[in-house]
Image (cartoon, rainbow over all chains, first blue to last red):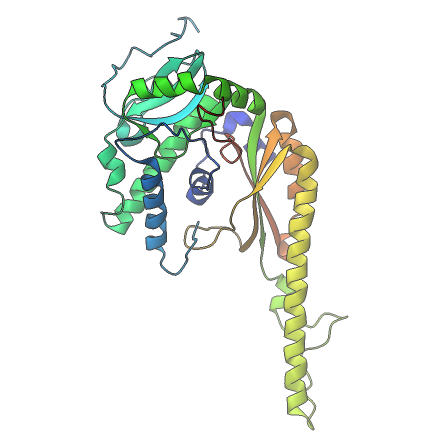
Length: 64
Length: 285
């Protein structure tokens, strides 16, 4: 089991989507450039992604 | 390392001049990441990942049609989740390709710049802040530590523990109401015990992890369809850990698990420091 934590082993493992979303969609946790956009508004996309998750699971307001 | 990596743009694939998806920034020089066959790593929607560099910083980008991202919310739900999963996994794969080599600052998912030139401007204007953040995170990785509880095997059955009250095992003939109350009280006690156990597990896991880490962040507890843990998620923490302390932290928290008693601990990672990157803006520099 500890072998799973060896850095060389990062790539082959399939990470759980929910663990990934915790990190990728967490509020304010991830680096943002405030210069981004004009074409695709990042925050809009961001919010839309949340909406997708919510709409997939209407019974769970915060499913990830 | 037979050929010196270009300090600036990777020339294998031309700049399309259009919008790019930005995955992460790291120190230059960085080579465009390759897949196992030596081809450029495929980014979102299979576009090749390239490097944009300025001020000794390299940004990993790939050309993207922003409509791909804006379409979110307009397709059948299964398709949306599949698309989200594709973007999330691709994003992580690109971040990790760099993270295996060096310190990275992962960008928020679906960060799109109108053109590579805009990325270059962002790197230029935020250079000091980015270098400072890279220096702060050098040698550190993120580890996920999740705790779960399940009903202990013993409590689920009808066997009364020697020290416990047999719940309604012998209802007194003269008082069925009293037997009912006893049983209810026993159930409430069992629930309170379970809650105390859960809180104690969370506390002990955090106390065990803390000495090996430099920072901690609690993510929201995992519930819903995507949550696939062994039971009810009671802690979902990210820890920022020196690489050298990874195995110690792993050992310190997993030893607290006792599945038969309903106590579970799961460790994920090491991750790029997603949960610990501070916003970097031109002003912050």
